Image (tube, rainbow, N blue to C red):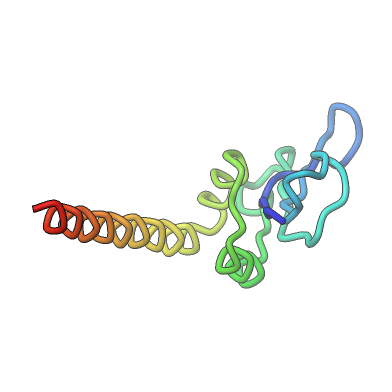
Length: 114
């Protein structure tokens, strides 16, 4: 089961609010979700009060392998920059580790071929 952190529309016509939810990738946008991780109200007057993110649960699911949708990632980057900083550092570290692993395998193939 692939997990995605994405926005779910709520509210009424011309006054939408959004929930930041964890859901299965196969479920529809406004359908069933596993856990609510925050909300976003684009109509709020103050910028600080228009987004709320439950960072500990969000970190929990990111550690379990959940992925962001594009808009959800932008929203979390604005609402919880420290969480996104650690998330991006982990991504960079994983890519570096994979690169080193590829180089080692390539050298092994070269030695075996010679």
